[in-house]
Image (cartoon, rainbow, N blue to C red; front, side):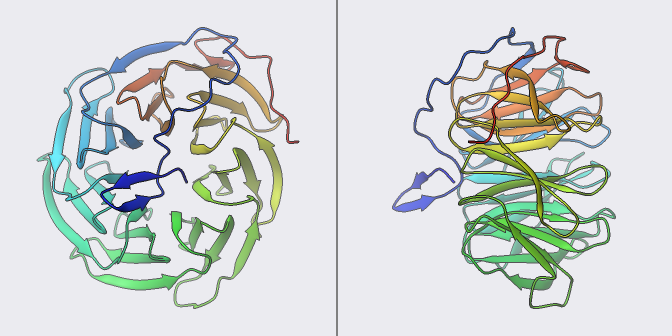
Length: 332
């Protein structure tokens, strides 16, 4: 991942250097709302399931909560002692988890905006986190080379998975309760609980695998430092791969219709038709790297990045605001 300096520590969660200009967008920006108020760059954004709230992970050590339509206004949750790197809602949207460069994960009650408990165990940054489908367990990924499973009710650490290959940047629960991890070595691994070795693995990126997302069928898609999207089969073998961004690709999320939204170092938000691997929209409203994308319940896409703003895009079957792109980046 790109690097952020925290005192004398180099944090591999986002590139603060200016991105290249890249090609111009063939369509209008299609931004329907821009949310201001953050005091520093944003490393991640997530949408509340079934709701209208957006949660952001901010470099200023806070978690942001704001309404996608401007109400409620931005609220900052304070509790981390260093940069907040990732956020995740539980399936009901009433609890939020945040992970940071202080090596901690914090659980928050969304209605009261109060911290419920702090999860301590990682010895380096908490780089990603997610809830299982029941909301009873939280999975965290760490730069200490581990993924950890926690019981949400009392914060007990249930299992530690030692992942080879260096830092673990991203993680997810599968539909059957297995764990997926991706990280520094560009390898996607699947773990059955209680097993010390992965039950499946595959390498699809030349270096860091930053972010993974699951389709409605439960199949993974990933992006990484090579700027590529990789689609995987159930055995974690790459089934398709193409160049998505110029420079590093940091973020991706599936829309309800199966399309993919991505964000990258080149300051763009892009929308992809997965079947044809064709780019159907490119948005250029951000002034710096885009580190997070999220999909709201109504299909709109939210993006956030180093320029401190959230942009809300109106997604339609052919792109954002009905303006398709005729461009497609192909793998070299």
